[in-house]
View 1 (cartoon, rainbow, N blue to C red):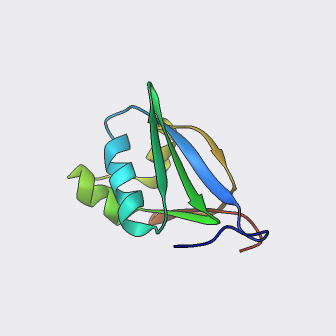
View 2: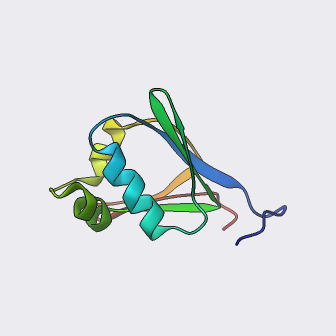
View 3: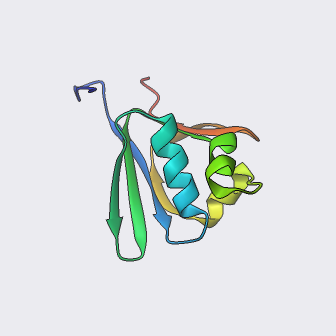
Length: 98
């Protein structure tokens, strides 16, 4: 388990309860270590230490259909960290100290 220290900071995002959210959550859990998912009425909070990756291929695997990374905008209500990389294959949310 990753220890939080002065160089580690949480990144995260909040997802609405839309049909794609469950597939995105499953993909995040599969592709990232130490992810914390907290469910609230109406939205889900996802947190990771320093870095969070969302891979298109993994989301499509759990969704059972095509998915474009820009479709994440339909599910996200807020996020914290920097969008360090966003292309057709993956999204990387992290702090600049990593």
